[in-house]
Each structure stands twice: as structure tokens, then as C-alpha cells.
Image 1 (tube, rainbow, N blue to C red):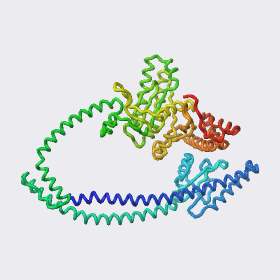
Image 2 (tube, rainbow, N blue to C red):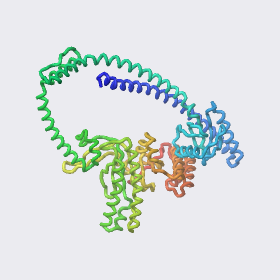
Image 3 (cartoon, helix red, strand yellow):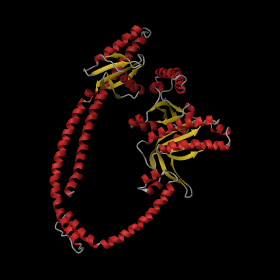
Image 4 (cartoon, rainbow, N blue to C red):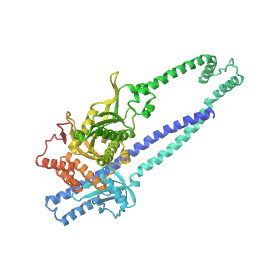
Length: 560
């Protein structure tokens, strides 16, 4: 292939890429601006409709008509009339769904298929808020929604997707046309200039071919141009006279390569004590950096066996060691299969981390999935314990995410590749909090926020989250939010968690009456649920004795 063709093949993609980036940036900026305005307008209308519905219900409460069905129906009809009044075009649709997904109110005739109903109710139960998308009545629509508790309605303000993105789609077409025209012009100009630039090189190649065919190292290439091609010819002339010197250098480089190989084996020997071989291979481009401490963002997991002292008292030492080895084997395999590093064993507990020495985009996700897998693994382990007539193990897991110091720490005679920092201490405290909330796994708001930056990862792991409390652990004044998490929840439990999370919103807003109604709803779905019952009792206390104005929902823990 000629050099001119190579120049075109190298430079043209760069030009096109630059044009694509520039046009793409313009398009996405315009699209974000347009869609943001549309989102804000839809959210504003939703807010106004919610205020109107609240006003209608407050009228019923004020006049003590909440027990009269005909008055409630009149209030619902008023809400429907108000919804019709704020519709601006034929593509808009406002509807309300009851808790079963049936259409309770609609601004236009609408029939939902079973699949459509299930899809939209799943989105509503998740309680993600903001702008969502679903198929309603056979049409793809975007919608904003809110749950109106008195009517037990999910109220949706929707717009056809094609109308919602019409302006953005028109900008995209114009961008593509401009990009095609710019790329064509760039290609033509590049062909012209590459031909001009490569013409002198052809003469240099001709002279080099004469030297190669004649095997005469005394020959030289004529230096005809005072530019880069002329310097290329002069450099080639110097190169012929330096071949012997180059051969000596090659021998020296070979010797250094042998030394480098021995150094590599030494470093591998050090780090294979701490991390899996595949991570060392991926990090070996800069081996010395593995021996230097650095600040990194990691996910840290602590696990512990509950009441281990009482378990050990019921088992002979050899049986206890055998059970622990089987338990640790399963737990460690899960951590390493999820790209984690087992830092150390702390008695009957495990400390592990994700994100060093090699970081991944999904470290936070993998740490949570590993924790859930560990809980499932203990269930299988306990089945074996029961069959053998041995005590079952119960465990707690705490996971946190943040900046730590990672590196080799210790003395010249004994070193550990480990992580230290305040975030690590908080992860350990998170594990201990499982006792307070009667849970098996707790994650911090830092892990929750890290996962929230990539919703696709949450969908990939089929994860659900339940906000339990804001806690200031022992020794800390700043509170952190703690969540329980689950994977592929049953429909009843997923719905209960959605009610619980909405109740927590009201709880932090000091609307304890609404919060109590939501926690009561959770208990009706999950009888005996400890977390909902505890929060319901708190709400009752705060309704009778409101907290001070400085209250932010933080519970201070006096013990570890």
C-alpha cells in the first residue's frame, strides 16, 4: 500500500472522528436542552395536578366528607376535569391507575393490555421518579407520575414518545447532513494534499532501492530537499555507518532483558502471595507501582458469623475447624469469582475489597452481588450442617465505598497488601449494624450512589434497595444512610419495599402521619416486618412528641 493511501487511511478517520465529536456534542447539547425543558414542563404539570388533588382531598377532610363515597367520587371527578383542562394537545394523555393497575381515570379512552399493565406497574412500584417510558394503549409514551395516597391512585401525565422527541429528532437529521457534507469536503482536500506531500518521498525510496539491490553500503542516498524528507535521507546515510555499533547495542539490550526477566519473576513471587495471577499479568506494565501506596476508590466488604462463640462451644475443635474451612472455601470462591481480593481473615470474619490493584467499572456492583451470593451460599452450607447434626451459621455483611489508602503495609520482614482508612472502619461498623436491624446485608449510601450512576448495572443485577435509616455509628457525628438490598424480589416484597421507600421520604420530611400510613401498608403486605414495625413506632412517638427543628433523621449508635 502506498504511503499516500496510508496517510488518507490514518488522517481521514481522525478528521471524521473530530467532526463527529463536534457535531455530536452540538446535537446532544441541543437535545439535552430541549428534553430538559420538556421534562421540567411535564414535572410542573404533574406537581400542579398533585396540588389540586391534595386540595380536593383537604376539602373533604375539612368538611368531614371522607366517609361519603359520593363526595369522594365528586372529588375524583373534579381532579379528572382539572386534568382535562391542563392538556395542551391531542398527543397528551393523563390517566390514573389503581393499585391493581386498572384504569381508574383517563382523559381519553384507553385500554391497557396485560403486558402493558405489568410493565407500567413494575416501573411505578420501583418508585424511581423522574421521566419514564412505557407502552400504553399500544403507543410508546414518556410519562411523569406520582402516587396519590387518599385515592390510592398512580397518576400519570404522558406524552407520545414521537411528539416528545420531535424537535430533538429534527436536530439529529440536520446534524447528520452537516456531518456528511463536512466529511466529503475533508476527504477531497486530504487526497489533494497527500499527493503533494508524498511526491518527494518517492525519490528517497528510489535511492534506497538502489542501495539494497546493489548491496553496496558505501552508497548514499542523495539529499535533494531541505525538509523532513531531506533529513530522512541523511539519517539513512548515517544509519549504514552505525550498523556495527547497533549490533553491540543489541547484545547489551539482550543482557538487560535477561535481568529484567529475573526482576519480573521476583516481583511475581512477592505479589502472588496477595493477589490472583491474572491481576498481576494485567498490572505488570508498571510493576514498581504495585509496591507504592496510593489513594483509590474501592468497595470494601466485611462479613462475620453471628454468635460464633456459642457455636464453637457446641462443637469439637476438629469439627469446628472442618466446618470453618468449608465455610471460608465457599465464601472466598465467591469473592474471587466476582473479581474481589480477600484482604484477611479476622477470626471468623472476612475482609475483602474491589478496585485494586486493578479497578473495574463495576466494582461497586460486583461487591454487592458477591455479598448476596455469600448469603445464598450460607443457606447451602447450613443444609449440610443440618444433615450432619451440627449448628447452623448465621452471618452479617456490611459494604461501603469510598477513598482509601492501598498498598504494602508492614515491616521488611512481614508485609500485607491491604487497605486502610476511615471508609474501611465504616464498612466494619456497617456489618455490625445488621444486629440492630435484623438483616443479613447492609450497604452504605456511598455504594447506593455509586450504583445509581449506572442504572444499567442495577438492572443487570436485578437489584432492589430498601432505605432503613440514617445512622451515626459509634465515634462519628456525621450520619450515613443505610440500605438493605435484594435480588429478583417476589412481587409482594418488591411492592412492600416501594411503599417503605416512599414512607422514608415522608419520614425525613417530618410528615410522620403519611410515613406511618406507608409503614402500615408495608406491614399489611409483609406481616411481622421488623424494620417497618420499628419505624411505625418511631412515627407514633414523633407524632405525639415532635422532634426539634434541627432533627435530620439521624440515629446515633452508642455501641459498635
